Length: 212
Ligand code: URA
Image 1: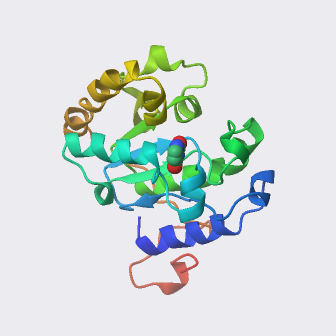
Image 2: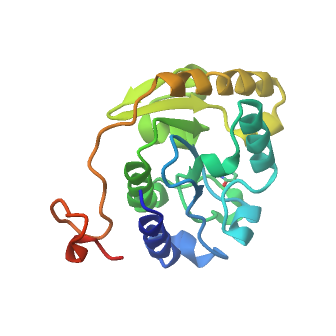
Image 3: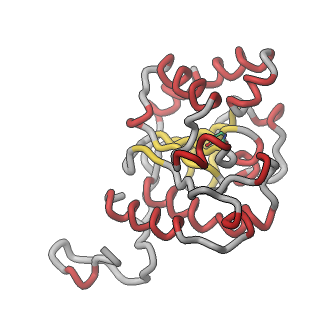
């Protein structure tokens, strides 16, 4: 998607008051990276560092994510990283179902705008967004087709930091990413136009270019 469309979405998220989490946030954490990335990661929710900086995965879990990415030859600017919810829950508690519901529209617009070839789901909340009945033990390391989206559930980096037994498994699951991407195609779905429903725009027709 165009960078400006992503900025517009980020601006919408920045003023969101749809659920209680807006009351405790320092700022929203919409996600960041390449708006045309082939590879997207979805985590759970911002933590304290993310809430302070407005960026996803900048704390310890983020450092581990960077290392795991480097091991398979990716850097953060090449991928897109987002969370299921865009505001930090108090004391890092689990997101509640209604909070996930309120934020769903933003994640959907991100995914549909980026149209990644592969979405890596970091942990239970991202996995259950696509596969509601899945357990991490059962789903991790297996690619699934969810409608147009190719998804790969893996353990959350924070879980591997808490339980070192999971670290090797997480590394092995990251090793699947490159070969999966090499075989994957970009899903053919219509580009989303945020905030406007309208027909196909001509290149030179400014009246059809959404809210930019
Ligand atoms: N954990 C997450 O799920 N997301 C972040 O952005 C940071 C830590």
